[in-house]
Amino acid sequence: MLYGKTGVLALATHSAARTDEEALIRAAQAGDAAAFEQLVRSYDQSVLRLALNLLRSPEDANDIYQETFLRVFKNLGSFRFDCSFHTWLYRIATNLCLDHLRKRKVRREEPAVITTAEGPLDLMDNVSEERADSNPQRSLLSSQLKSRIETALGELTPRERMVFEMRHYQGMRLRAIGEALGTSEEAAKNCLFRATQKLRAVLGDFL
Image (cartoon, rainbow, N blue to C red):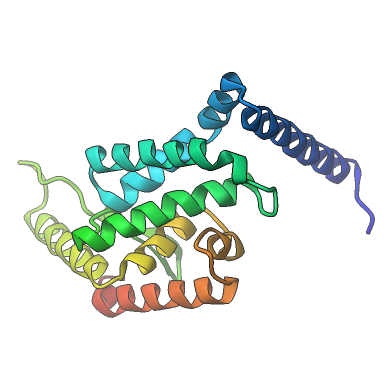
């Protein structure tokens, strides 16, 4: 396969980044606290964002965040580089979030992204805060839409919510989602399809 200068540079940069991360991981495995801290800084915001979007509670998200990195610290020595560190880390975080969701059995209330004929649609962009000078009809529709979104998200299982979040908010590919959840790309794809169908069933007339 032939690559242009830009492609070669991108491959070299990606390779260097993976080499640097591998060096950090090995240093952290050897007990280098600074290396472990740098690893945490590389992924802490994405883990916290994932937990917050799923759990909708800053307190719960922070608990999951702390527990995730505590488990990473305890189990880093068992990491054998048979998958990416990102995948391994997300597997820990997603399992913790799934366990938490199953225990709480609560509905997600974050924005949902649905693909329409005009392209991706962030549903909550249409839900504006009611103001004194706002259009009464628009406010009513916004209130109805928000209620329907909450109902629709409540139809999703914890795993469906997880896959939907990772695909639309984390921008992860289905293969990576499958790996993070310890399943196949096809299973992740089917789960995302079910989630989208459920959302469309409830929100179809609003799209």
